[in-house]
Length: 525
Image (cartoon, rainbow, N blue to C red; front, side):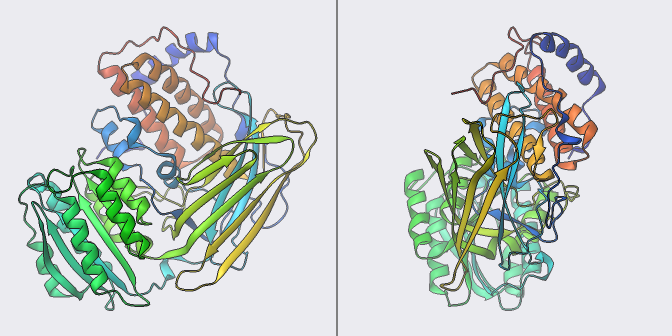
């Protein structure tokens, strides 16, 4: 795989610089001074943005692997290959010290600055969570796991080789008390090995003997896997299915609605589901939706480095929830309107109130923004509330309330965080104002995500010039921001911005957009 830290080719950067002259003559971008002297004198623990704990991520997140791989192969990703939950989750966001006395601590951090497109006021509240639990020292309950592997003809060769290697790595990460079943599915489903010890020779032999055959009957494979998990379910065990597939459902019950209904029914009984996709042709929407319904995560295995990361390092994370039945309520006070919530799949906004439901929270193994030696990222991510100023008086901004159930018990945990500001709602300091560095990084993440989604949508409709009018100014803005801020995540994002531009130009698009002014991603109401 190509090194993602490699800067864009000099010729491309030169073309961007030339193109930017015409763009900047029509649009004055903000100075992007968000990274210098904008931090307030935040008092209390973690005011420097440091974290002494581990990040916390949401179940159901689509990782960023498919979007990356399409760009690396010279393609143009569609808007359905990226979502805000998964994109944010691949950014390590520092949080204050998790000293709330619970397994999960919530933080509400305020940021005010001019946005990276038009410079108009942008007020955000970054809602992040972390845990004092050390991921390396995590002791998890025993596992009752069934792995359902797609053995259709399209899995022959490299895809199945990756799965065999990944499952053997997973086996090495299992503990003596874990029990694993293996289901293979093609035209129909077959129970290959049932409820054997995770470190057994029988399991290793069954994995090594996997061979491709037939079509893709996802419904049969998933149903059989859940039935096997249920047959061996015990109190005190994590009961979970892992579904691995490289394609679309082509035989049996192929309706996404029926397959999702199956996952929902078993999730209601307490059986979780994690999905892993391979190749570029699997049903992204279905695999992501199944993971969300099953309180799990959706991963994309793009290469052998990803095999190691997903199957080996993530095995602890996707089977051990820190919290379940999580609700977050956000209330915004007079002076602001709550416009939108990014970074979660289950958010509702009405008036000045937002409600978020998250099935489970999981621990993230990654603890720094440069911990991506295997090409993948992930540090817990965050959620971002976008506020629109409506008043003039400084003071209280809002309140964040967290409630969750401790897994394996009836205990409920509640936390409340109050958010205030010394600024008037419309006041926008030149260098921005931030509770700590987390908010600034969160704002940059949000700008990149929105730009990727907008550009992918435009390119999918044939408007390559429109996509370039978004990506080129973004690239220049990120270059300027990185001159003041050293962040490996954003550097990696910038690589993909350049690759997106290069891929669009390579398919014959004009290098000069007839409308070089990028659209306003957050237009005024």
